[in-house]
Length: 297
Image (cartoon, rainbow, N blue to C red):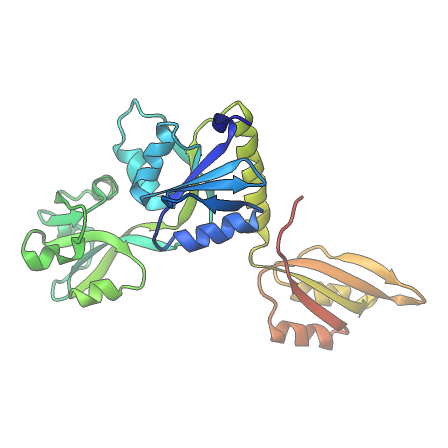
């Protein structure tokens, strides 16, 4: 295939999204060989390549057509959507990926009182996300000065350059270290797959659809378990009610035992020891709980 016929995916070169994104792509059956400069990964087996870049650059690279898809934080994607020029092609969230969870929050010095957003009126709020913060302030009817900072946002109040901050929060340890406390959540974020509103119409579009199908298959069963057991037919209703998500099981008749069946069910979530013990009390035996690696409907 010609190089332009290969699907290109941008992802964070280094950071909290890097390792889980690599694991997700590996579960989708993708293998890569890294270039010497460690900025590009050549796909082996499938015509899909990776470009390793800064998180903040990913939406722009997609909009410019340098990459076809990107794995990026929802906060970064939404900020790009709010601040990009109207002439820039629209970039959409195609799939939530279920890792990299965090939140964009407003934080104030620990000694400052806070009860509602109106108390932020007239204050200086430092942030790297002026679009998201501005949208939240407007929605809450608050007039405040947004101070744009590219980094080290959390030290702005101590330096006297801001009265509060709006920054990403995960554990809250960084806020505590800087004598700040979280007072309001602007948005919840996680890693997402981003792409153009309209996928390419050439081979790359077909590859993108293939990627989406594989991602759906991996994400759908990521926390699922396959449960297998033998049980009396007259206990099926009681046992099914105990299965997480109450799936519709597949039944197979046991040869020579008309009242016994083998039950197989794909459960959306973990199956606890307590649930297994309750199923055993209902009549189930020879129970197996197996992880599910992938599924294709």
